[in-house]
Image (cartoon, rainbow, N blue to C red; front, top):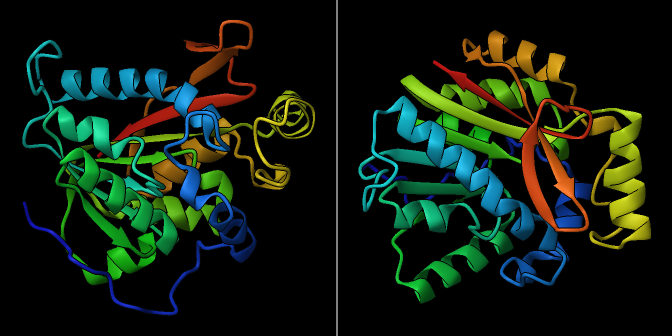
Length: 254
């Protein structure tokens, strides 16, 4: 697997929002605490991993029941955080690269993967810097719970698509810009239940399915219909549905 060992230091960080970075910096050491500020992602991880693995195996004609069904696939996780997706996909054989704009996240991810004995290529930098500095293309690109935290969202999707190889597949999950999403993802999760620190999400950065589909098409990708994600708060379990009013995932191919 070809690897970028480091990304060049540049001022080209169009997608980075300094306020968002400051917010995540305060939580950077807590990525692997299932009861900490990233608890909602730990709860969501089972469902989103299941969907990613199922679709990767179907798309690349792999046996999902095999020992390492993703063996040899080069996958890029954009906004990888502490490595919550990189690690389990590595165990399934994927050759993972994780990139994140926050150095502390990468430090946390590297330390944890080393502790787990996993070989993951973690890079500190932005998607813009990755596109500028490398011609490496990936079989699959993950953009999970990231786009609602960046600036220049259409350009961000374009750059995500630029890292994908022809015949590749991209996964994007985010939050819809609806009243229900505001009520549950901000008022409920941040102010009432205190699952997330206040200010984690900005309503104006939520993305509608029509917007994400348009941006993916503009990036030269072929989007599939969006898939809704629904949380059962009593059982603390995520499931997939046709309800796109809060969380949803979009898959696109190239």
